[in-house]
Image 1 (cartoon, one colour):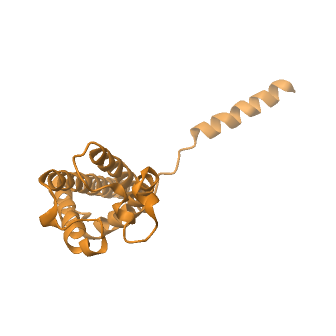
Image 2 (cartoon, helix red, strand yellow):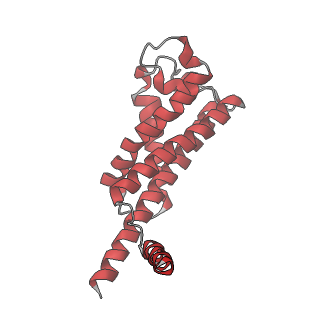
Image 3 (cartoon, rainbow, N blue to C red):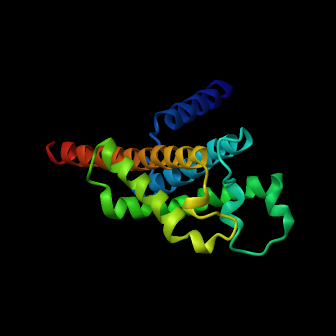
Length: 176
């Protein structure tokens, strides 16, 4: 009797091991790419701020709201990085809607450059702590442009890769 119970347990464990995990949906992957991209590149941006490569801190994203002086301290920087992760979800979905079918790095580079122009030119009045382009030093400009280019490549290439993988998987299923 005891052997049968152990055998049943082993069979049950074997069945659980044989189950395949359901892959994430394309939408879930976009959300994940957005969060990871925003947090990762926000951390890199924070490091460049700490090492004085740029004068633009991650807490800049919080500056439109009067939240007090804590937003300029370390806690504000970490919350700013998390906020970048959340905003990056929207950025990832905009890429999906506009450029997902382009599967090369240039689309991501262009997207990153467009994002930089949007933030530093168009949204500049929304961020009172962000100096105008003419008042930014060269190190800040070069560093932020490079960060936005790399962020754009990360978002763009990751989403396009997933899209094309899904397309190949669906065509291989239809051929069977």
